[in-house]
Image (cartoon, rainbow, N blue to C red; front, side, top):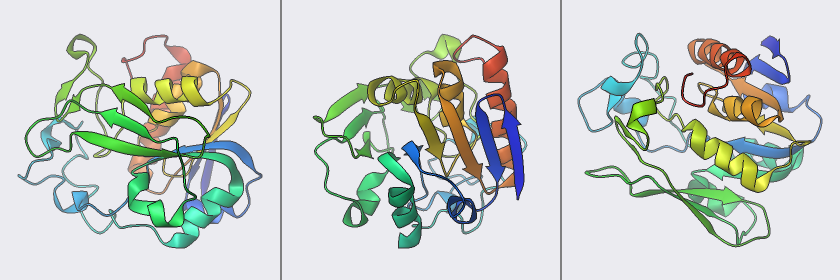
Length: 225
C-alpha cells in the first residue's frame, strides 16, 4: 500500500477493501466502480470503444485482462457503512444491493452508434431525479476547443464531476472515491474546495491521478489536466 498526500487530497495505491476497513466515516462517496460490461475485452482492440482517443502509452495494454468484473457485495456494503450518502455511477448494475432511491441522475452523453445514450447514477439523497447533458461520445466532447485528455477507459469528465459536487455536496464535506481511476473526482474536489480521499489499485493509473490532482491545485483551467 502506498499513501500520498497532496494538499487536501489523500490518495492510496491499494485495494479499496483493505483501506476501507481502516477509514473513518465520510460524508459522501462519489465513485464509478467496475460493473462488468466487457470493457476489459475491448480496450486496445478494434471494437467500438474509441480507445485510440486515450493517452499513450497505456490505453492499449494496461486494462486488458479481467478487471471489468461486477464487484463482490462486500464492497457495496462497505461503501454504504462508511458513508452518510452515496453517488454511484452505474448504480443500476448494483440496484439490488442498494437502498431504494428517488434521486437518480441521468447523464445524457449525446452518444451515437453503439454507445449508450445515457448513464444512470445512483444517489442516496431525498430529492427528485435530475438530468445533465454533456457530450462524451468516444473522441467527441461537449467543448472540443477545450478538449479534456483521456487517460482511462471509463474516465468521467471533470465538468460532470464538478456539477455533481456543486449539486449534492458542501465545501465542508469529505468526499471519498474508492475506485479513483485517473482522478477526475479528486480534480473536481481540488477545484471545488472539497477534501478528498481516493483509492486506485492499478499503479499506472494511480500515478496519473496523483499528477492530475497535483496539477489541479496549481492550475486554474478546467480542461487543462
